[in-house]
Amino acid sequence: MRTLLTIASLGLLGMTSSTFALDEAAAESLARKSGCFKCHAIDKKKDGPPYKEIAGKWKGKGDAEQKLTTHVTTSPKVKIDGKEEDHEQLKSKDPGDVKNVVQWILSR
Ligand code: HEC
View 1 (tube, protein in one colour):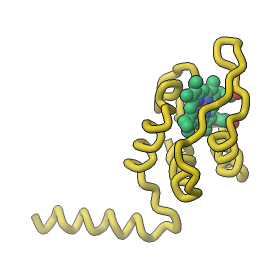
View 2 (cartoon, protein in one colour; view 1 turned 90 degrees about the horizontal axis):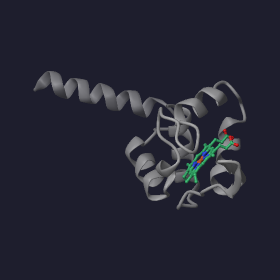
View 3 (cartoon, helix red, strand yellow; view 1 turned 90 degrees about the vertical axis):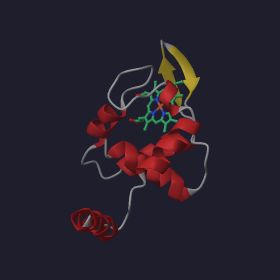
């Protein structure tokens, strides 16, 4: 029990030491609620690219967070089976919620 508690508190310390603490459960839940998983999976191609591939594509690019934030909040046109469609937006306008999902995608 003592060992378990120690591991748990180390985990918490690890989280608070970074400036932004990713809330994976909240990110997944908002993505689910927003219908994102209809077209995206973590590592499988559906109508949209897998989040792992998106993370890879943007890795190390300074404007990744800004670009993806725009992508998931402004409904840009995307091509699905050759047809142009408006991309889905997140069902929350809270900047913290949006950042959380964007960071979650970028850390896949
Ligand atoms: C109807 C299908 C569909 C839904 C629903 C959808 N997406 Fe997408 N998404 C796409 C497609 C297709 C692309 C690829 C666009 C491209 O590369 O031109 C894409 C691309 C992306 C990208 C990468 C953008 C880039 O510039 O690299 C992100 C991030 C993303 N989607 C997040 C989301 C989130 C978050 C949601 C939920 C709010 C969502 N998507 C819902 C189809 C969808």
